[in-house]
Image 1: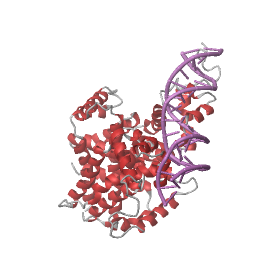
Image 2: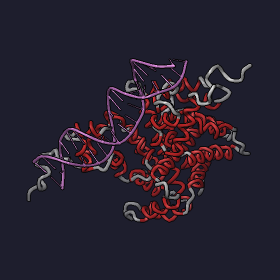
Image 3: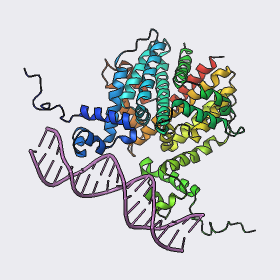
Image 4: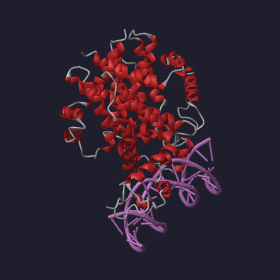
Length: 223
Length: 223
DNA sequence: ACCTGAACACCGTTCAAGT
DNA sequence: ACCTGAACACCGTTCAAGT
């Protein structure tokens, strides 16, 4: 009745896919996407780069596993929203906030089609779409539209995070971007210039939700 | 009154940013994103890798310029749609088709926030939103939602293209994916399984348009 | 079975030297 | 002003050799 398995955890530092993924997530969070290197990662795990390949096929698989690991937590619980609309907002915001906390997830989601993480988001969204009482023929398109919108925002937020100097705040970025928009050629960019002042004090999260609501509005309009 | 400039085009092969970008686009189209290398590119241009750096700051700038070059054509003409809705569909489909022809554009658009190409798409969309007759306060959110949706699809389509073996057709991919969906755990993926049969004979382009229409439906519902 | 770490085949980028 | 191409500082990945 020994509580420990055969010989793996005599010491707690035996290599495993979980430990590798965990270390990769830490590295990505601290050093960003360019900070994840098999050399740095293996040094952190006190081993050689080759050892990682015993547990993980390649870097791409490692990134997928790291994304899954973080999003698993977010998507574990069924959304508690009282209405399907609220449940969808909840799922969307969960992904949004996860990307806010771990920007590299955004890059990963935007890059890799039909990865298990994206599939799980799709499933969650679809179930709530089914509860919305719209024609069945519209379910697939509706869930797909929501997913693609979420993945689009994911990619852009990740890009924003990547281009930010460590010191700058979200407000600095918006201010600079707003000035850039205001300085565009009025003949070529009339709309963007009109909207520039709104950029400075808009809230990314609220605008993200507004987009979700526009899609929801379109879907419920089919009833 | 010589028609040729000082000494640059004595021969037509003098290096310039345009020629470099042109060669980069060709290389990206033929060999994919991983095929674009400063060594291969400079060999194609019959020069050394260092020469490129006289005209282009780095690889990232080259990719941005290549994306801009291709999308400039797509976004040059004002959309001819009779209604704002149709004009928006036209812009969206233009981007969609450009990505279909040059998948690497999708990756680029999904990766780089506020790049000039994305800004031009945003502007085009926004102008038509203004013509839609919805409250002004909604214009920014509406244009942003459309752009993010388009960029999300862009990223996924690029990812699909990247993961495809050169031989496989779109139908092969859909067939395989449909089977994968159908084989998922019914307890965990009820919605995705329900929708799996629709995947096999659905049309990416039509589903893309359906998503645009859902957002448009949400926006016009604000009137 | 699992780990080690040197070595391979690449990258993007720099820079002294040329014209 | 513009080009050349060797060299630098990295990568991901492999693999013979160890335990």
